[in-house]
Length: 534
Image: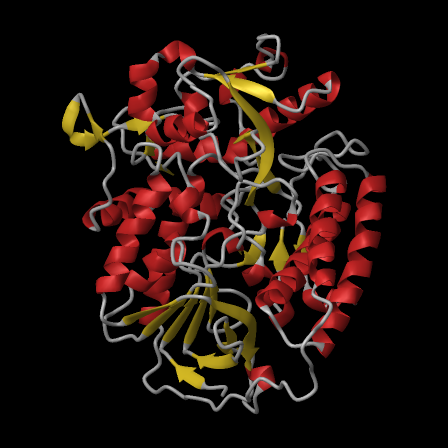
């Protein structure tokens, strides 16, 4: 039996961004947080390094701004960069107030230990050992569980947004979403005055990724179908150092390992970063990832090695306890041996276009965190600016929702999801085959190094897949696997289309056909009505 549920604010996504926003709304607002898996299953809890903010008296805001501009290959929006960095300390103070257990400074018990990561000119990464994302997520989940106005709803998959176009109401406003209950298979309607997309990125579009299985670009795809503009999807950050081991699924070796002196080496022990950048291992991620990719292709080796053993066991266990223990389970003692690593898709720098309040092109629809495009990251995200963006824009969006709340609320009656013309599928093998094909050709043709020919091949493949998936979606009952595949294929097509439009190499987009960087930086903005495959 399909039902309609009514809330004041509907938050789709239970990571750092969604939880932070929900916790900063007034207690008289009824909030639903939708999670398609367990509450802590997203990418936020996997973040190891920390949160970038100017907290050291030897550092200043202008330094952080300049580092962000440089890492973003001068494509970042200066207004968004300044807005984020100027509000960083306020967000950190809020997290401390929520009792996030950041690592204290041994030399100053009243302060916190700060580390340095690639692209940063100063130590400014506040962290909780090497499990910052987990510490933040667990703390915020505990606060959300205690909040009487917040409902935490798990194993529910957002299928599509509901706008006025799907009702008899005028205007261009988002009024809710269709949500599938994975236990019953029913697709219910959820209405809300404000809908917040905090669904994370789309790195699962690639064969190798550091992200969780849920990073299928759901928010980006739903917003596109609803009519929102999407920007800079060609900039997919590949983290340089993902653990290379047949049994290690998506385990990241933190940037902080290089920040604390870790050296990248070839199989014969030779260092190589000096051939690519004067900053060596502390160069921005795009440079390090391309260097590793180049050396692997040149040598034919399956990986390179990251060596931190010279820092000694006591230092390693204190600073990287999670990485140390995890590697030990695979027979790697990082206090004695180098760590085998490869690049892996890590972060989606593009996304749904928003303003400083997280507001999209559609009234009542907000996007925050990795699913959004604020202009902060430009052509490459500076390490540890991602969690910072989550908290700053969550606070800004919560404030905007609160201050623009109408005096009277209209609760529309939403049409039920129509299942009268579909049947149960007996060909689900098609979904797994298409999922595998999609991720493989995206890795091969739209990866760290691109060409026009590769992009054209990828476009041809994704067009065929979209046709098959849309036919399947029209004729068979919706499942969570089908929803994710449909979204992932759409996002893949947006990535390919964006990459084809950029006739230069900049930041994370490197193409052999246009190796130079254009003199004038421009964003790649896609508008839904310009594309026949919407």
